[in-house]
Amino acid sequence: MLFATLLVATMTALLKTILISSIMVVLLALGDYYVKKASMLKDYSGWHFLLLGTSSYFISAFGLFWVYRSYKFVTVGAIQSFGIVVLSVLLSVFVFKEKINGWEVFGLILGIISLA
Image (tube, rainbow, N blue to C red; front, side, top):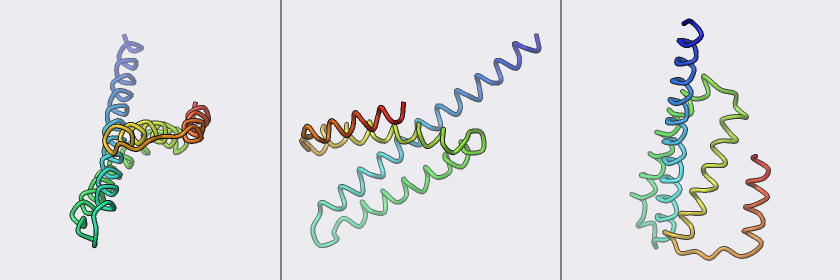
């Protein structure tokens, strides 16, 4: 009975961590989206997008704070890096319509392998 209780508590903590980490990665990608959007506008007219991006980064820091209390820096960093690489590529290709060349694909593959 004690083992089952500990297992449920551990799984609940793990699921919470995965959920918070996922939200954090989405917020970081959203911040990147807004900063990119701001950089595409002329004459600093995108300052409101820059503020949205900065706010998104700031909010994600609270998630990092909670996750770092439970896991090692290197573990959180690897998970976060993998998630942000995948979401950044998806944003780049599908939202900003940027083309990815062969060298960039090669670099992405090496980067993902390095995180595995």
